[in-house]
Image (cartoon, rainbow, N blue to C red; front, side, top):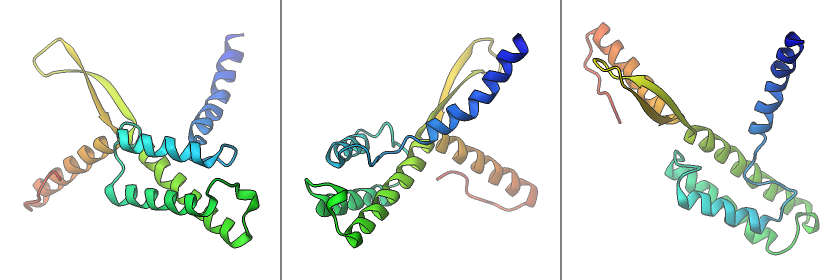
Length: 154
């Protein structure tokens, strides 16, 4: 019985993970105007997409403006094929950039004990910050091993 429950949980995990990855900023089933307002609000608030770079933010906003200019208040189904292809290309660009930014902006928290203390503290960093710390540490170790003087940090 316990073995069956464990197997069911293990087989369910990939489905849950793939469902989380499927969450797109723009979805063709919802009205574009509503989705555009939500994306712009989340970009402005800076929580969901806190790690998006300035050039990527500009690319997303420009793509949203292009889509809005072509679609207007209408529907994608009513557009000619060349305009529809342009909108779908911009749609894909927005989803790709925002999915990466959302993943990089996800916070990871760990309980860590400070050296010399028995009290654990919670340390929270985004995925992108964690990657930067890892790369900076790796470069610092490599510079010490190679005898080079490498700048650490941003």
